[in-house]
Image (tube, rainbow, N blue to C red; front, side):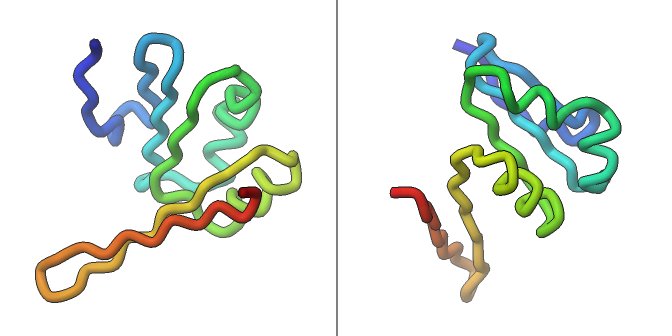
Length: 88
């Protein structure tokens, strides 16, 4: 078991070679591509991308990769999660 933390300062953290966690809050989709992280999505694993912008989402869709989108709304000190899986 690995302890999961926010990879904000490292952009990408890998857990047990099966989970890739990207936090691009302080970066752009262009940085994601420039750093070679897009190619990393070919690695057989679960890839979680926080703060992906619309440009990165469209790029991922253009490659035909399966994506599940989770939108979080704050409502009266509670969170509402919307899960969108257009391929199911």
